[in-house]
Length: 440
Image (cartoon, rainbow, N blue to C red):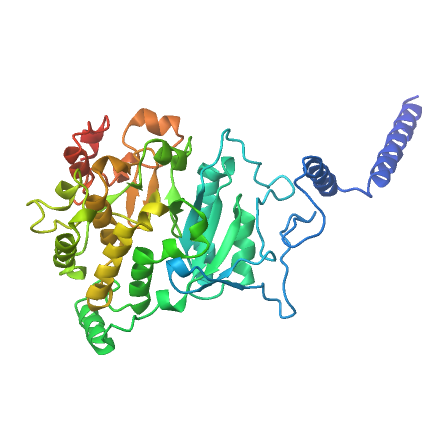
């Protein structure tokens, strides 16, 4: 009897095994991954997002298709805007890859989910091909913490040509249009009024004195470009607002609203999250040049300005406070205004970008502090930010919890003695955020 029972169990087990094998073989023509891909594609087609053919179209492999010429290079066109200076070369052809990059499959960014209209705004990054992985980290931070819900564009600018790897990687990460522009040589080079030998001796001297970036030519070109030209690039002329993003930054908290719209609604034109004192050795004569400009153009100086933030003696000397410009959200029309352009042109002719090492941060900060009424400059306490070596972690425990922040408040630089943010609050007679005493 026991033997018969054992044989019966064997027969039943074999029967179920055959059924299982038959089920697997009948479904083997469609893998799990294929099911997901087809389902996602069907959804996107139904929404009108996925379209067949065309340059930059998204295929069912989940990758963006790049149109290339016979040599595998993307098409590049020339755009001339006589009003804004020399011609600039940019990747503006319809063959360029653009987004919204909804992608295919479970790793794709969701479509924009924040309600309401969008501002005429873009992120802007100055980068080279070698920065691709560092800027990828920054893009992911911005997308995850904010832009996946808004899908704002992203403009990448380079003094050379972006390669296919840079374009493919960054386009895949951005949820808005990814656009690529080349900087005009006249905007990235020595102007003809600069004494090359004198500039060389300055770099050699700064190298001996171990001043950071003191011997760098490219750093000086970058500072000059960010000070006076990025907002004139043909791609940037299409926008009213910009948010500057550098490689390898971090955003520690969710951004639960649209900062561009906040700026517009509240009549702000410039904003910051970190402020500090500039290296004295890099700008020894900058304030002297600024005072000459103020004397020549008093019409450009706002009545209710922020001189108190910039100077401890009513403008006789500069205290070196500035807004750290590797994070900026600002109004491009202000930078393109007659007042700012004349200010930059005047300082440019002074030669300090090359005979010293003037940075774009004090250039922007002094302009905002003198030309804008103080109420048009905004401090974003709630946008948590890191750029080596400084951290802005929002002051206020409840805010950090509400915004899902992962920064350590002990790292917050705002109330450090080398920060100028305390001065900003005092000048504007603003109450300091609750809990700031614990971070001093």
